[in-house]
Length: 118
Image (cartoon, rainbow, N blue to C red; front, side, top):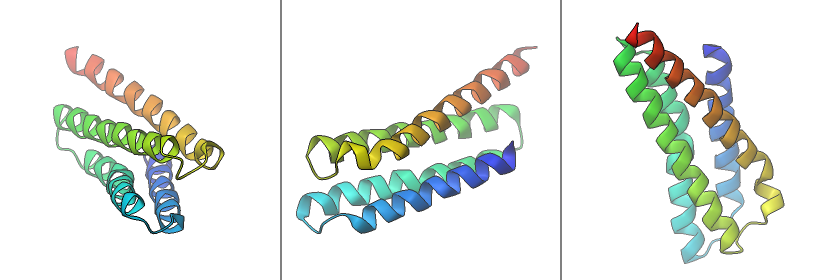
């Protein structure tokens, strides 16, 4: 599971990079692109930090940070589509992966919190 999520979050970051590289160069897309690039590539970095946690509490905290980055990335996707810069269809797969990663990490956090209470 750990390696699978490492690969998925790295793949997610690479797909975000390709998206940003394909954006037209306008003042708006430079700002939105920078934001989505920062948050989208941070997902994998935050997840890797979580994997190196020294305690369950630290892991929960790092995974929650990963979830925050995913949510922020989804927001920038919304703005890219809402502003008409990117068609919804082009982002469908990335949005789906965002939702899947979010669901997986939420389940991990819930399980860790239950384990910690016992």
